[in-house]
Image 1 (cartoon, rainbow, N blue to C red):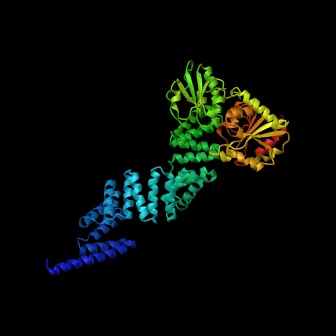
Image 2: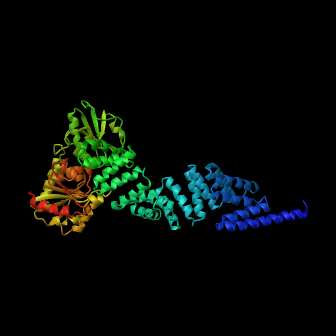
Image 3: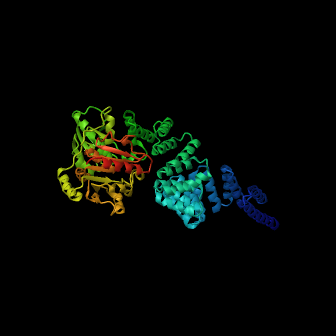
Length: 603
């Protein structure tokens, strides 16, 4: 090559580089047609201009023509094989062409050329996530975060991999950081909101979904999620239109229809709830949540024939199925029991076990030896139930205890096995220990100081119960009962609710005995010496009923199914009387009815 031709080629390369720089300025400004014209001019000036080929490939990828992009970038890399930016962009094109292994290889090559290339680390993380290599993805996302700590996208991606790894709390931190860095986009808010909802931080979850719903009226998922968050906050009236909108946008969403039905149930709008439960089941006949909820609705109405079979689906719901297990013997389906050994298996709460262990008697009458596996705090009391041969108090999940039985049956499945049988049990079917009862008799005689009536009081349930905010009564709300003469009051309350005693100190002489009750046998011995128990819907209501003691149960306007609808008695406990709210959250009518009943009833 002579001097003049070499000079001309050098000038052409120099001119091409200048043209590419001009093209990049147009590209960054979003003027893509102008940028493309300049890149093509640079190639015309210098056919070996790798940068022009690279950026033409980037433009093609922006048009979603990833195949063309890959070809252009391959030509560029043939000319400049160590260009880290081109290698990284070629990796992005490979990822979009669903070649994740190739994408990872290109990103690794880019990082070899430029170890502190934040985008390449981030893009490698993306490919590794698609390949299921979560731990390696996290490492590269963290490197990208360290190199560019102000990148909201890198924080979001690190959050994604932590979420996929099951580290929800760490993921929430990264999504929060992405938010703080300006990411209020839908993916960030939706991912963060779902994790917050899963962590029961429902107010915060709602705050994530609300702006998405406001700006995206056609986003079915956002409407559903916000409705779900409002559900958890007991804001059912607000949840209903959100579910309706989600269903309108996605008519085949059986889950949204089910949740709409649940919101109506929570508002005691049972007829509307039934319509939507049945609609959900038409859409998805095997949906356990709808079958279970519909079963409880029917049981509440007293339709036991239809309700009990559907109630079995409680074991299959997404939130409950992990708590149920198959035991190493046959599950009893109602077969003859003469000469058989049967295990009644514990499930759900203590009150449930008290309520349904009554069926040991009918099973024993069929000729079975009936053992009962119950919560340890119930063991001594259940041993007094007619028909129970032996009590087991092993920890939940200890399946070996059923090895030597012919059959087992979950305690709440027992009514299904006795169709048409009367629900009333002969009461009492539990009995307090005589020695403990005698000790409490002496103690209460001293504390009551001649009062004509001794009343036990429980005002709060387990705060972890979904509806506890409705079923529990603030103790100060019951304060008007203190004005009635002739009563000695005993606070049976245990747990966090007992702290409310300080709020009525000096105004209501309540004898706080809850801390002295270490198990249900002790509570039963105390109740045996009371004239009346007044309680919200807790295990104490079941215990008093099983002991055959007078018990007045205070119910929210949307009560649990087992108390029926619109009645003042209980089909389960003949000694029970029910006082119902008429408006959800308003206990004033219940308190007034209690005062009247206490004033009118004899000792």
